[in-house]
Image (cartoon, rainbow, N blue to C red):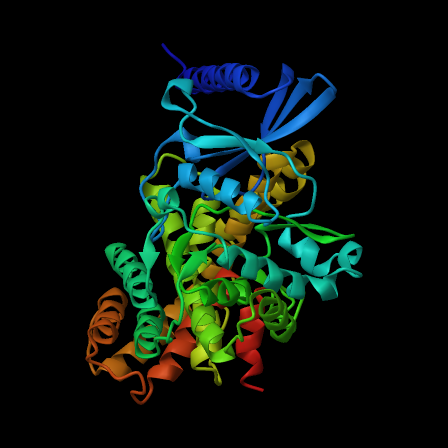
Length: 485
């Protein structure tokens, strides 16, 4: 009888060895001055693309490279409107470097015959890319007041890059209306009604900005995708895979989204600066005045876009080649973005669900006790015995179990309140899922006005109640509660 677990283990080891051998062959053949291949480690994070640290021997001693690769090397389905792909990202790195934007140099773009999938190998740069450290670490205390101004200057340089004929064939032109509709259409295809997403989509289409000039847009310029030095500030702009031609204010608004402030809500630019500093840096380098209302449109859109993107991660977990424990956890973060939309568009008092005491059996361990034991095992023993990506995913797994525990405590009352609110708002009876879909369709089709009596209160209560389950430590949850004080 064959032990399937052992067979799977041997298969995984074989695939890893094959990957290492193929990568070694590519590095030895295509990287100049490389005299030996030492190791390759996948880094933590990187839910949409894989990132690797490659250690090599060179003529001058040990050296480092980085590699960006599609999940599993597979040419995955488009998961973002206008996503140009890794080949275009490599070209963008090259154009940005020539245009004075700090980026790593690309050494080699993978080919099908390499057997490694889609991706490229590039220069390893030192610096900090963890957004929480940049926003909160004492090491960045001195440089932090300068970072928002630097970001404004860097974005101005990106928006001044020439769109070459080769680049224009690989990146799409996206008007604000097209961007909103494509993002909204992608969400609708998930068949997962979230009325606050539909409300925000309607608001965006009703408040389109007047775009004076289209430029290259990085489209993911945020704290976490910018490598920083405590001494000098920005050292590299990373992750260009979502670039397009469009409204340059998209980049400024995205940088201001609450998702990328890492809890430092009083500093809206990445958790390290003020909007006025960002705008001043941009104007100094571009000569163009920034309209704060225009940027706010894109800040709202950013939370709308990332709310849909998080749901997309859950879909990718169900249907994609890389079923990482990280993807469903990110899927639950959609409620974080939705509460940010609430705070931006319909702030006000909220009514939270009340908790239930988790039932404990006198004879058998309860479901809660089982979950807690596994969670604590992941946080203590597994994390203590692992490093790198495995340690990171252990933390993600423990956090997912915390969500389940809060759902056991708050979920029943939250759903009861949401159902009652839907019945009153719609004047209909039915299941929670059916009424949620009815409201989403009414907003989507324009059958319900955005100022409908009771709508804002229902959306606030349902979204804030959900974030109380998904992530009560999220700063947007605290901001929502502050409106009630």
